[in-house]
Image (tube, rainbow, N blue to C red):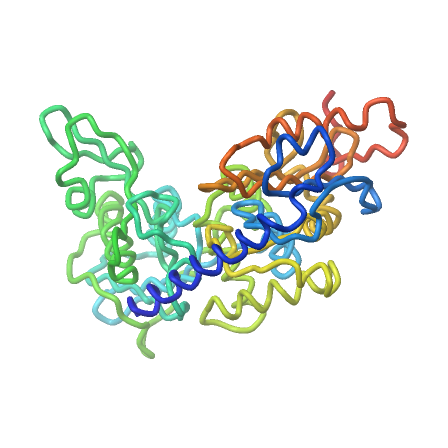
Length: 425
Protein backbone atom coordinates (compact mmCIF):
# COMPACT_ATOMS: atom_id res chain seq x y z
CA UNK A 1 0.00 0.00 0.00
CA UNK A 2 2.82 2.40 0.86
CA UNK A 3 4.47 1.80 -2.52
CA UNK A 4 1.15 2.40 -4.25
CA UNK A 5 0.66 5.71 -2.46
CA UNK A 6 4.23 6.78 -3.25
CA UNK A 7 3.71 5.92 -6.94
CA UNK A 8 0.39 7.77 -6.98
CA UNK A 9 1.91 10.93 -5.51
CA UNK A 10 4.88 10.79 -7.90
CA UNK A 11 2.50 10.61 -10.86
CA UNK A 12 0.49 13.46 -9.33
CA UNK A 13 3.62 15.61 -9.11
CA UNK A 14 4.67 14.89 -12.71
CA UNK A 15 1.13 15.45 -13.93
CA UNK A 16 1.12 18.82 -12.15
CA UNK A 17 4.42 19.86 -13.70
CA UNK A 18 3.15 18.98 -17.18
CA UNK A 19 -0.02 21.02 -16.86
CA UNK A 20 1.77 23.90 -15.16
CA UNK A 21 4.16 24.08 -18.11
CA UNK A 22 1.27 23.80 -20.53
CA UNK A 23 -0.79 26.56 -18.92
CA UNK A 24 2.29 28.78 -18.51
CA UNK A 25 2.58 28.97 -22.30
CA UNK A 26 -1.10 28.90 -23.17
CA UNK A 27 -2.37 32.39 -23.91
CA UNK A 28 -1.33 33.91 -20.56
CA UNK A 29 -0.13 36.97 -22.45
CA UNK A 30 -3.62 37.46 -23.93
CA UNK A 31 -5.17 38.91 -20.77
CA UNK A 32 -6.17 42.51 -21.51
CA UNK A 33 -4.95 45.47 -19.53
CA UNK A 34 -5.10 46.13 -16.62
CA UNK A 35 -5.32 42.36 -15.88
CA UNK A 36 -2.17 41.60 -17.87
CA UNK A 37 -0.01 43.17 -15.16
CA UNK A 38 -1.58 40.96 -12.49
CA UNK A 39 -1.98 37.61 -14.30
CA UNK A 40 1.31 36.03 -15.37
CA UNK A 41 -0.10 32.49 -15.45
CA UNK A 42 -3.83 32.21 -15.04
CA UNK A 43 -7.30 33.15 -16.11
CA UNK A 44 -10.28 35.25 -15.14
CA UNK A 45 -13.88 35.36 -16.33
CA UNK A 46 -17.24 36.96 -15.55
CA UNK A 47 -20.67 35.65 -16.56
CA UNK A 48 -24.14 37.17 -16.35
CA UNK A 49 -27.11 35.59 -14.59
CA UNK A 50 -27.88 33.39 -17.57
CA UNK A 51 -24.31 32.08 -17.75
CA UNK A 52 -23.22 34.16 -20.75
CA UNK A 53 -19.54 35.03 -20.51
CA UNK A 54 -19.09 38.81 -20.50
CA UNK A 55 -15.31 39.01 -20.41
CA UNK A 56 -12.22 37.01 -19.51
CA UNK A 57 -9.03 35.44 -20.75
CA UNK A 58 -7.59 31.91 -20.97
CA UNK A 59 -11.03 30.59 -20.08
CA UNK A 60 -10.40 27.14 -21.59
CA UNK A 61 -6.92 26.57 -20.16
CA UNK A 62 -6.83 24.02 -17.30
CA UNK A 63 -5.38 25.14 -13.97
CA UNK A 64 -4.86 23.64 -10.51
CA UNK A 65 -8.03 24.55 -8.57
CA UNK A 66 -7.02 23.87 -4.94
CA UNK A 67 -10.00 24.39 -2.61
CA UNK A 68 -12.35 26.02 -5.11
CA UNK A 69 -12.98 22.41 -6.17
CA UNK A 70 -15.04 22.11 -2.96
CA UNK A 71 -17.79 24.08 -4.74
CA UNK A 72 -18.24 21.36 -7.37
CA UNK A 73 -18.05 18.71 -4.63
CA UNK A 74 -20.85 20.53 -2.82
CA UNK A 75 -22.92 20.91 -5.98
CA UNK A 76 -22.73 17.19 -6.78
CA UNK A 77 -23.18 15.94 -3.21
CA UNK A 78 -26.21 18.13 -2.46
CA UNK A 79 -27.91 16.58 -5.48
CA UNK A 80 -26.81 12.97 -4.96
CA UNK A 81 -27.36 12.83 -1.19
CA UNK A 82 -29.85 15.64 -0.64
CA UNK A 83 -29.44 18.61 1.73
CA UNK A 84 -31.16 16.75 4.60
CA UNK A 85 -28.85 13.72 4.40
CA UNK A 86 -27.34 12.74 7.76
CA UNK A 87 -24.38 10.42 8.27
CA UNK A 88 -24.96 7.45 10.55
CA UNK A 89 -22.95 5.36 13.00
CA UNK A 90 -24.24 1.93 14.03
CA UNK A 91 -23.49 0.48 17.47
CA UNK A 92 -23.77 -3.24 18.18
CA UNK A 93 -23.27 -5.25 21.37
CA UNK A 94 -22.33 -8.91 21.81
CA UNK A 95 -23.05 -11.43 24.57
CA UNK A 96 -19.90 -10.39 26.46
CA UNK A 97 -20.92 -6.72 26.55
CA UNK A 98 -18.43 -5.85 23.84
CA UNK A 99 -19.30 -2.78 21.79
CA UNK A 100 -18.85 -2.69 18.00
CA UNK A 101 -18.72 0.78 16.43
CA UNK A 102 -19.49 0.64 12.72
CA UNK A 103 -19.07 3.96 10.97
CA UNK A 104 -20.17 5.29 7.59
CA UNK A 105 -17.74 8.20 7.46
CA UNK A 106 -19.51 10.73 9.70
CA UNK A 107 -17.15 13.75 9.66
CA UNK A 108 -18.82 15.24 12.76
CA UNK A 109 -18.24 12.36 15.17
CA UNK A 110 -16.79 14.69 17.79
CA UNK A 111 -16.47 14.51 21.57
CA UNK A 112 -19.82 16.32 21.91
CA UNK A 113 -21.51 13.88 19.54
CA UNK A 114 -20.11 10.84 21.35
CA UNK A 115 -21.48 12.20 24.63
CA UNK A 116 -24.91 12.24 22.97
CA UNK A 117 -24.37 8.61 21.93
CA UNK A 118 -23.55 7.49 25.47
CA UNK A 119 -26.53 9.40 26.88
CA UNK A 120 -28.78 7.52 24.46
CA UNK A 121 -27.12 4.17 25.25
CA UNK A 122 -27.74 4.72 28.96
CA UNK A 123 -31.35 5.68 28.23
CA UNK A 124 -31.72 2.38 26.40
CA UNK A 125 -30.55 0.49 29.45
CA UNK A 126 -26.84 -0.09 28.78
CA UNK A 127 -25.12 -0.86 32.07
CA UNK A 128 -21.66 -2.15 31.10
CA UNK A 129 -19.19 -2.10 28.21
CA UNK A 130 -16.11 -4.29 28.02
CA UNK A 131 -14.16 -4.71 24.77
CA UNK A 132 -14.40 -1.90 22.24
CA UNK A 133 -14.16 -2.87 18.57
CA UNK A 134 -13.93 -0.55 15.56
CA UNK A 135 -15.55 -1.94 12.42
CA UNK A 136 -13.82 -0.31 9.42
CA UNK A 137 -15.48 -2.43 6.75
CA UNK A 138 -17.51 0.38 5.16
CA UNK A 139 -14.42 1.88 3.50
CA UNK A 140 -12.13 0.11 1.02
CA UNK A 141 -9.95 3.02 -0.06
CA UNK A 142 -7.41 2.35 -2.78
CA UNK A 143 -5.04 4.85 -1.10
CA UNK A 144 -5.24 7.58 1.51
CA UNK A 145 -6.42 11.11 0.69
CA UNK A 146 -5.08 12.21 -2.72
CA UNK A 147 -2.61 15.04 -2.30
CA UNK A 148 -1.70 14.13 1.27
CA UNK A 149 1.79 15.19 2.29
CA UNK A 150 1.70 12.84 5.32
CA UNK A 151 2.52 15.76 7.61
CA UNK A 152 1.51 16.45 11.20
CA UNK A 153 -0.83 19.25 10.03
CA UNK A 154 -4.57 18.73 10.69
CA UNK A 155 -5.46 19.69 7.09
CA UNK A 156 -3.51 16.57 6.06
CA UNK A 157 -5.53 14.21 8.29
CA UNK A 158 -6.61 10.87 6.79
CA UNK A 159 -10.25 9.86 6.35
CA UNK A 160 -11.95 6.70 7.50
CA UNK A 161 -15.38 5.20 8.15
CA UNK A 162 -15.11 5.49 11.92
CA UNK A 163 -12.96 8.40 13.01
CA UNK A 164 -13.36 11.15 15.59
CA UNK A 165 -12.52 14.81 16.17
CA UNK A 166 -11.42 15.34 12.55
CA UNK A 167 -8.60 12.80 13.06
CA UNK A 168 -6.57 15.33 14.98
CA UNK A 169 -5.79 15.76 18.66
CA UNK A 170 -5.59 19.04 20.60
CA UNK A 171 -2.52 19.14 22.84
CA UNK A 172 -1.04 21.65 25.26
CA UNK A 173 2.40 21.35 26.81
CA UNK A 174 2.85 23.29 30.05
CA UNK A 175 6.00 25.15 30.99
CA UNK A 176 6.90 22.17 33.16
CA UNK A 177 6.58 19.83 30.17
CA UNK A 178 3.29 18.20 31.22
CA UNK A 179 1.03 17.21 28.31
CA UNK A 180 -2.63 18.19 28.65
CA UNK A 181 -5.62 18.08 26.35
CA UNK A 182 -5.78 21.28 24.33
CA UNK A 183 -9.56 21.70 24.69
CA UNK A 184 -11.96 21.47 27.60
CA UNK A 185 -14.51 19.16 26.02
CA UNK A 186 -12.00 16.44 25.08
CA UNK A 187 -10.28 14.36 27.79
CA UNK A 188 -6.57 13.59 27.78
CA UNK A 189 -5.88 10.45 25.75
CA UNK A 190 -2.78 8.23 25.68
CA UNK A 191 -2.41 9.10 21.98
CA UNK A 192 -2.08 12.79 22.87
CA UNK A 193 0.82 12.13 25.23
CA UNK A 194 2.48 9.97 22.60
CA UNK A 195 2.16 12.48 19.74
CA UNK A 196 3.16 15.45 21.90
CA UNK A 197 6.43 13.83 23.01
CA UNK A 198 9.30 16.14 22.17
CA UNK A 199 7.21 19.27 21.69
CA UNK A 200 8.66 22.33 23.44
CA UNK A 201 6.99 23.69 26.60
CA UNK A 202 4.30 26.26 25.88
CA UNK A 203 3.05 24.49 22.74
CA UNK A 204 -0.71 24.61 22.11
CA UNK A 205 -1.71 22.99 18.82
CA UNK A 206 -3.66 20.27 16.99
CA UNK A 207 -1.81 17.28 15.58
CA UNK A 208 -2.74 14.87 12.81
CA UNK A 209 -3.20 11.39 14.33
CA UNK A 210 -1.39 9.81 11.39
CA UNK A 211 2.03 11.37 10.92
CA UNK A 212 4.37 10.16 8.23
CA UNK A 213 3.51 7.01 6.33
CA UNK A 214 1.74 5.37 9.23
CA UNK A 215 -0.99 2.74 9.20
CA UNK A 216 -3.89 5.18 8.90
CA UNK A 217 -6.62 2.63 9.65
CA UNK A 218 -4.88 1.49 12.82
CA UNK A 219 -4.23 5.03 14.10
CA UNK A 220 -7.77 6.21 13.34
CA UNK A 221 -9.21 3.17 15.12
CA UNK A 222 -6.90 3.63 18.11
CA UNK A 223 -7.89 7.29 18.42
CA UNK A 224 -11.60 6.44 18.16
CA UNK A 225 -11.45 3.60 20.68
CA UNK A 226 -9.49 5.67 23.20
CA UNK A 227 -11.95 8.55 23.00
CA UNK A 228 -14.98 6.25 23.30
CA UNK A 229 -13.41 4.57 26.34
CA UNK A 230 -12.65 7.88 28.02
CA UNK A 231 -16.17 9.19 27.45
CA UNK A 232 -17.65 5.86 28.55
CA UNK A 233 -15.90 6.33 31.88
CA UNK A 234 -17.04 9.94 32.04
CA UNK A 235 -20.62 8.75 31.50
CA UNK A 236 -20.29 6.40 34.47
CA UNK A 237 -20.65 3.19 32.46
CA UNK A 238 -18.37 0.51 33.99
CA UNK A 239 -16.35 -2.07 32.13
CA UNK A 240 -12.94 -2.60 30.61
CA UNK A 241 -11.29 -4.75 28.00
CA UNK A 242 -9.39 -4.76 24.73
CA UNK A 243 -9.49 -2.10 22.02
CA UNK A 244 -9.34 -3.57 18.51
CA UNK A 245 -10.35 -3.44 14.85
CA UNK A 246 -12.97 -6.12 14.28
CA UNK A 247 -16.02 -6.59 12.08
CA UNK A 248 -19.45 -6.92 13.64
CA UNK A 249 -20.09 -10.66 14.13
CA UNK A 250 -23.38 -12.23 12.97
CA UNK A 251 -24.64 -12.71 16.52
CA UNK A 252 -24.19 -9.11 17.67
CA UNK A 253 -27.32 -7.06 18.40
CA UNK A 254 -27.90 -3.62 16.90
CA UNK A 255 -28.14 -1.43 19.98
CA UNK A 256 -28.47 2.03 18.42
CA UNK A 257 -28.14 3.75 15.05
CA UNK A 258 -26.93 7.28 15.63
CA UNK A 259 -27.65 10.00 13.08
CA UNK A 260 -25.36 13.02 12.96
CA UNK A 261 -26.64 16.22 14.56
CA UNK A 262 -25.75 18.12 11.38
CA UNK A 263 -27.33 17.52 7.98
CA UNK A 264 -25.50 17.78 4.68
CA UNK A 265 -26.48 21.39 4.09
CA UNK A 266 -24.92 22.35 7.43
CA UNK A 267 -21.84 20.26 6.69
CA UNK A 268 -21.52 21.93 3.30
CA UNK A 269 -21.54 25.36 4.91
CA UNK A 270 -18.79 24.17 7.25
CA UNK A 271 -16.44 22.73 4.64
CA UNK A 272 -16.96 25.70 2.30
CA UNK A 273 -16.55 28.43 4.90
CA UNK A 274 -13.70 26.79 6.79
CA UNK A 275 -12.28 24.89 3.80
CA UNK A 276 -12.14 21.57 5.64
CA UNK A 277 -10.40 18.94 3.49
CA UNK A 278 -11.46 16.26 5.96
CA UNK A 279 -15.21 17.01 5.75
CA UNK A 280 -15.16 17.58 1.98
CA UNK A 281 -13.45 14.25 1.29
CA UNK A 282 -15.86 12.31 3.52
CA UNK A 283 -18.84 13.94 1.81
CA UNK A 284 -17.27 13.09 -1.57
CA UNK A 285 -16.80 9.44 -0.58
CA UNK A 286 -20.34 9.19 0.81
CA UNK A 287 -21.75 10.44 -2.50
CA UNK A 288 -20.03 7.59 -4.31
CA UNK A 289 -20.99 4.95 -1.76
CA UNK A 290 -24.63 5.96 -1.54
CA UNK A 291 -24.93 5.91 -5.32
CA UNK A 292 -22.95 2.75 -6.10
CA UNK A 293 -23.02 0.87 -2.81
CA UNK A 294 -20.83 0.54 0.26
CA UNK A 295 -17.93 0.16 0.93
CA UNK A 296 -16.77 3.61 -0.12
CA UNK A 297 -13.91 3.91 -2.61
CA UNK A 298 -12.30 6.82 -4.42
CA UNK A 299 -13.26 5.27 -7.75
CA UNK A 300 -16.97 5.22 -6.83
CA UNK A 301 -16.78 8.82 -5.65
CA UNK A 302 -14.97 9.96 -8.81
CA UNK A 303 -17.58 8.27 -10.99
CA UNK A 304 -20.59 9.53 -9.01
CA UNK A 305 -19.43 13.14 -8.98
CA UNK A 306 -18.40 13.08 -12.65
CA UNK A 307 -21.76 11.66 -13.71
CA UNK A 308 -23.63 14.24 -11.63
CA UNK A 309 -21.59 17.11 -13.04
CA UNK A 310 -22.26 15.83 -16.55
CA UNK A 311 -25.97 15.75 -15.79
CA UNK A 312 -26.02 19.31 -14.46
CA UNK A 313 -23.36 21.02 -16.56
CA UNK A 314 -23.30 18.98 -19.75
CA UNK A 315 -20.50 16.71 -20.93
CA UNK A 316 -18.33 19.45 -22.37
CA UNK A 317 -18.12 21.51 -19.19
CA UNK A 318 -17.85 18.45 -16.93
CA UNK A 319 -14.98 17.06 -19.01
CA UNK A 320 -12.99 20.21 -18.23
CA UNK A 321 -13.07 19.34 -14.51
CA UNK A 322 -10.63 16.68 -13.27
CA UNK A 323 -12.00 15.58 -9.88
CA UNK A 324 -9.85 13.03 -7.99
CA UNK A 325 -10.82 14.09 -4.47
CA UNK A 326 -13.44 16.21 -2.77
CA UNK A 327 -11.15 18.81 -1.26
CA UNK A 328 -8.86 20.02 -4.06
CA UNK A 329 -5.73 19.12 -2.11
CA UNK A 330 -4.52 16.89 -4.96
CA UNK A 331 -2.38 18.81 -7.45
CA UNK A 332 -3.57 16.58 -10.28
CA UNK A 333 -7.07 18.13 -10.09
CA UNK A 334 -7.86 20.56 -12.93
CA UNK A 335 -10.53 23.11 -13.86
CA UNK A 336 -11.04 25.76 -16.52
CA UNK A 337 -12.61 29.15 -15.94
CA UNK A 338 -15.43 28.31 -18.35
CA UNK A 339 -16.28 25.09 -16.48
CA UNK A 340 -16.21 26.85 -13.10
CA UNK A 341 -18.64 29.47 -14.38
CA UNK A 342 -21.02 26.63 -15.23
CA UNK A 343 -20.58 25.21 -11.72
CA UNK A 344 -21.37 28.64 -10.26
CA UNK A 345 -24.44 29.00 -12.48
CA UNK A 346 -25.87 25.78 -11.06
CA UNK A 347 -24.66 26.51 -7.53
CA UNK A 348 -26.39 29.91 -7.34
CA UNK A 349 -29.30 28.68 -5.14
CA UNK A 350 -26.69 27.60 -2.56
CA UNK A 351 -24.47 30.68 -2.84
CA UNK A 352 -25.43 31.83 0.65
CA UNK A 353 -23.39 28.89 2.01
CA UNK A 354 -20.19 30.62 0.88
CA UNK A 355 -17.99 32.81 3.01
CA UNK A 356 -17.56 36.49 2.14
CA UNK A 357 -14.27 37.74 0.67
CA UNK A 358 -13.94 41.48 0.05
CA UNK A 359 -17.69 41.80 0.35
CA UNK A 360 -18.52 39.02 -2.16
CA UNK A 361 -19.77 35.45 -1.46
CA UNK A 362 -16.73 33.49 -2.59
CA UNK A 363 -14.59 30.38 -2.18
CA UNK A 364 -10.84 30.69 -2.10
CA UNK A 365 -8.32 28.07 -3.17
CA UNK A 366 -4.73 28.34 -1.99
CA UNK A 367 -1.62 26.22 -1.96
CA UNK A 368 1.97 26.88 -2.98
CA UNK A 369 1.83 28.66 -6.33
CA UNK A 370 -1.99 28.60 -6.47
CA UNK A 371 -4.19 31.63 -5.65
CA UNK A 372 -7.79 31.23 -6.77
CA UNK A 373 -11.21 32.78 -6.09
CA UNK A 374 -14.67 31.92 -7.39
CA UNK A 375 -17.97 33.45 -6.39
CA UNK A 376 -20.59 36.09 -7.06
CA UNK A 377 -20.21 39.87 -7.38
CA UNK A 378 -22.65 42.23 -5.69
CA UNK A 379 -24.83 42.51 -8.80
CA UNK A 380 -25.11 38.73 -9.05
CA UNK A 381 -22.59 38.12 -11.82
CA UNK A 382 -20.47 35.00 -11.32
CA UNK A 383 -16.70 35.36 -11.44
CA UNK A 384 -13.65 33.09 -11.58
CA UNK A 385 -10.02 33.96 -10.82
CA UNK A 386 -7.43 31.21 -11.43
CA UNK A 387 -3.84 32.17 -10.67
CA UNK A 388 -1.22 29.41 -10.87
CA UNK A 389 1.76 31.67 -10.26
CA UNK A 390 4.15 32.80 -7.55
CA UNK A 391 2.62 36.24 -7.00
CA UNK A 392 -0.69 36.31 -5.14
CA UNK A 393 -2.60 39.08 -6.94
CA UNK A 394 -6.09 37.63 -6.64
CA UNK A 395 -7.37 40.43 -4.36
CA UNK A 396 -6.21 42.99 -6.93
CA UNK A 397 -7.96 41.09 -9.72
CA UNK A 398 -11.15 40.77 -7.64
CA UNK A 399 -11.11 44.52 -6.95
CA UNK A 400 -10.95 45.18 -10.68
CA UNK A 401 -13.84 42.78 -11.30
CA UNK A 402 -15.94 44.45 -8.60
CA UNK A 403 -15.58 47.78 -10.37
CA UNK A 404 -16.03 46.40 -13.87
CA UNK A 405 -19.82 46.58 -13.71
CA UNK A 406 -20.18 50.05 -12.19
CA UNK A 407 -22.53 52.26 -14.12
CA UNK A 408 -24.29 49.28 -15.73
CA UNK A 409 -27.94 48.44 -15.16
CA UNK A 410 -28.78 46.65 -11.92
CA UNK A 411 -32.14 45.37 -13.19
CA UNK A 412 -30.84 41.83 -13.52
CA UNK A 413 -29.15 41.74 -10.11
CA UNK A 414 -29.79 38.38 -8.44
CA UNK A 415 -30.37 37.59 -4.83
CA UNK A 416 -27.99 35.05 -3.36
CA UNK A 417 -29.65 34.67 0.01
CA UNK A 418 -31.57 31.53 1.03
CA UNK A 419 -35.29 31.51 0.29
CA UNK A 420 -37.25 33.47 2.84
CA UNK A 421 -34.28 35.60 3.95
CA UNK A 422 -33.75 39.18 2.93
CA UNK A 423 -30.47 40.39 1.57
CA UNK A 424 -28.68 42.62 4.05
CA UNK A 425 -27.59 45.99 2.78
